[in-house]
Length: 324
Image (cartoon, rainbow, N blue to C red):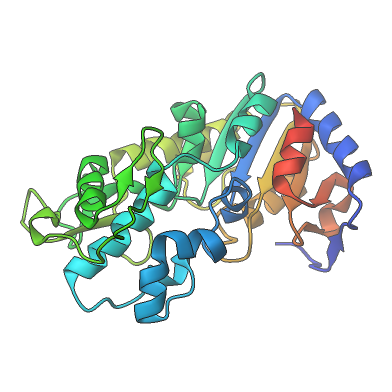
């Protein structure tokens, strides 16, 4: 653990820090991207405001819900209404195209590097932008997958076909690019009960694969990606923290001398133990590691690693463009 936790915050003018970040990216041997919700917000996946009212205005009027995130915890009075909410929630954040090309731009910036991505986002935006699936670790689930609610087994099921049917059942028009259009007559706030998903093994209701309690399913694929991330860290001289096994830690290449850049985008303090705290620890324990925190209003690092840190406070979308 760090002995001091006072913060080194950047100023509003990030031009000098951008130069440092571009140089660090150019000269590093490997890049690890840590992605939080701020990155998807920068890509246009806003959970409030105009976008929320466009697709969930009827829910806001009836139930007083004010944003997509809090609506995910609302105790809806029926399964028909619950799945109307969740099918919209999943479609606009998982299957509709990203409003801004932030993820594509980020791939352009790192595609020639030896990279790996760890993300707490559940929108699968990295894969849809063209990132290599073998270099991705989604820790908290995927809007595009169903799991048994019990759960009676550790398998996950793709849900695009079912979610599409639910969206159409409400009256939305799905355009060729995946965006939703609301017809003049509006849409209904229910889906037909025959569309509800049930577990093919035990018959229990299924739900979206999101880490919200101890029923979250980590299937075989989750563990493959977790292991791949741990191996990537070990290969680059970093002892893994958190998810990983002693076997992974035993693989650490103590002779590795390459430069590693940890780029943290839009990670807040909701689940700091997954990306932020480990990144700080990796930096403190390895002199060849540079930590970069890119965030709007929350760009900081502990003073212990100040000399190895680059903090860029600004619009993530604009900052990523400058990295290309």
